[in-house]
Amino acid sequence: MPETAPGAASRPADPGGDGLPRRLPLSTLERYMLEDDRPSHPMTGVHELVVRGPLETDLLQRALDATRLRHPLLRRIIDDSGKAPAWIPAPPQATVTVDRAAVGVRRTHPEGDWLDVRREIGLRIWVRDEAPGEDGVAVSRLSAAIHHCVADALGGLSFLIDLFGEISSLNGGSPLVPAPNPSRILHRGEFFDQPGLLPGLPKGRLKLWGHLLDGLRRMNKTATVPLAPAGDGKRVSTKPEPGGDVECPTPVDDVSPPRIAAFTEEETANFRAAAKARGMTLNDLALRDLFITIRDHNAQSLSSAVPTDDGPTALRINVPVNLRGPADLPASLRKPGDAGAGQRPGGLSIANKIGMALVTRPPELADDPEALLQSVHKEMAWVRETERGRRFVEAIQLAYRFTSQAPKRIFGETCYATAVLSNIGDLERVIPPSLRDDQGRLCAPAADPSRTLTVTEYATGSPGRPLTRATVLAASYGRRLHFYLRTDPQEISPEAADALLADLAARVRRSAGSNGSIPAT
Image (cartoon, rainbow, N blue to C red):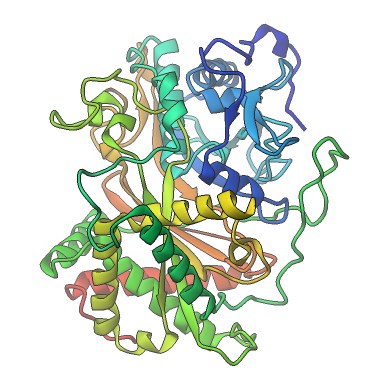
């Protein structure tokens, strides 16, 4: 149900005002996220911020209302009553109200993480007060749940940066950064084309489509091994029909807040140095270590995760790939020679503009960590060279065009990814200088220094889906590497989730301590 607060009529009305058509057709990726969404497995990303300083509810609500006006998809809901689902202006009574509670109240939103974007704006904001710091300064935990139709992890972070910019402006601190360019949202389904043919792919569009279909056929021949559950898993629910009963069907989501493995600045530097010494990326090492961690978890589990058929099996990790081009970036992040460098400074408003690369390995390859690392490095280099994440979106687009539905392999009862590993990089690079402190952290300066807000800790978590029972997101915040694990306690017990993250962190630390060439045990 849309969240409506007393006095909401006095807040800015959502419909109109952005100069965009009333109906915005969903992009291919947005449609995919909508159809793969269900109350039991919400297609919703979560962000958690530990905020030091006086985060006043009224000020936060004013900043939230103003920030939503800068982002068209936060002023709309989805109409899927026809053949082509589209974003339409949200009704005037639809708003997003800050939910606030005192110390000790559960960290999750009282309505859960599932957002029915056909009936409500795809955003929830809530605050839980924490015990003050030793110096008496107020501390609170600000959380945001953002539907993946609205934004991916980077899009959600962009919204939070805008929110803190608005708070700072209202407190007489930093002036607002330029607003995003509303018209860029019309191009969110378009991809940045490098000049010339993409290397490694057959020439011609028809041959390219054939290449995609061949890849899907090969994928279907290998059964993906899910992460072993703690029990029998959970029943998968479906969404209510449009216009029908708005009661959320059971079971509803019970997704945990992100678990955090934080590394010191020295460990972070060592891990980056280990990757550089090998001529690899930090993501190559993390991906290798996650494969081994999952293989060990499944081997130690009492419940079998191996499919019952006799065909070949493999671990498959979904690696999201950012598909934003230079014109999508704010001016502060564009390079002088980039395409779009002379366009409006705001860039793309929040949106989901990612692709996916499914990296597949037989479990036994984890017995040879060095061979696994080399193979992962070569494949990820090929993913970047050929924009394979984009190929995933094109495959979905093909399915919609010729069958009017996404591939059944993705939305069926099978597991198409054992886990997710997303790396959104060094967040200091995306925070404007006026909104970051001397440790590279997000802050909201104020004219009165005692009213300055600083995000001392940041965590985020990607959504899962049936049989994809764990998502891992890597990011550097405050110049320290973090791994964030999100699971469903109905499928992975809290103890098993803690052990999984601890094992991954320990393996990463060993990689950092020995230039990436480590034994499996």
